[in-house]
Image (cartoon, rainbow, N blue to C red; front, side, top):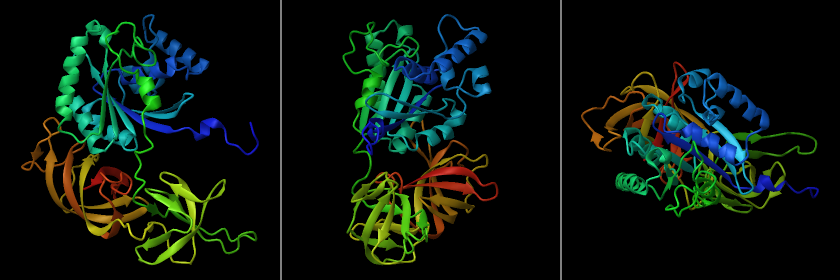
Amino acid sequence: MTKGKAPAYLDMDLLRFTTAGSVDDGKSTLIGRMLYDSKSIFTDQMEAIERASARMGGDEEVNLALLTDGLRAEREQGITIDVAYRYFATPKRKFIIADTPGHIQYTRNMVTGASTANLAIILVDARHGLVEQTCRHAFIASLLKIPHIVFCINKMDLVDHDEDRFEEIRDDLKAFCSKLEVNDIRFIPISALKGDNVVHKSTNMDWYQGSTLMYTLENIHISGDHNHVDCRFPVQYVVRPQTAEHPDFRGYAGRIAGGVFKKGDEVTLLPSGFTTKISSINTFDGEISEAFAPMSVTMCLEEDFDLSRGDMIVRTNNKPEVGQDIEMMVCWMGDAPLALNGKYAIKHTSKDVRCIVKEIKYKVDINTLHRMENDKVINMNDIGRISVRTTSPLFHDRYSRNRITGSLVIIDEATNKTVGAGMII
């Protein structure tokens, strides 16, 4: 390796994707198959799941789902309960997988796993076709503005690899998704158990001329998924080393939420409204001339201003919305229902505020996508539209424009538990 040059794999794209589907649709098995066929499993891991499969009385097929179903209760019941994250890499790309539960009562877990995903894999059992949970997961993926959705019609081996059955399910999915706001939808017939069209092309489905799932994941275009137009830099920490080498250094550290920042750019500081210019942009490896989402950097300004955590650096001619009255779609995760006039804490980018719930406008029937204006009780796993008023202004964008500055977390102050995920309208 050349001195001073980073390994090639560090420069590869990172694709974050989530799996979703009904119970027993084969999500964990699919991930296990991908890891196994792409040779991303260590020998000791493989030996461990072989032993676990034998203890559970499995047949000659190794239970690949055990790679992600790590909790004892998950293995005993044969279901996924909590989100399981797995990392692997191929010569073309790095991946982080969020394996999410299929049960209705774990919808909140799916929202957690899908919130940062570039792509969602939604599994559909070829025997059952479009079911309630398929609609629920497709709607949530659309609500979370996941740019790419891949429907994997799984268990094709149990319907004799029938092309007509695949086309029937594909047409049903297209009809439902026509009501959603999704830019890129794809359909792949697979058998996670047998490996058909997962990593290798299936010899049992010669009628399918499309790409395998792994080829799709390795080659799908994701660099345009970030907002590189609206410059947003929430300040997380003020860096003041005050060392002999850097006695007067003052930098503002954080992760870029949108746009491209360059040395010499004129910027506006929120909430003060002062304008200045960027004097330098620094990373762990040294100074750089420009930075873009989702890089983590430390910015220095030409003049000293009173900036602190929760403030934001933006482009002077492109500012976010600033306000205290916030309208949002919310996925409720709390044990107790959302309380009208209730007081909660909010975490938005790096800013912490408190709020009061002003109005519950409606709840969404996830199966029909209809607004339920007569039923405004939002319980755990429900999704609805609400408006709140915050104790201090938030610097926000619409969620459809920027998934970082357009999202927030609602926290119960009494328990300090996260009870809601909000997407600003």
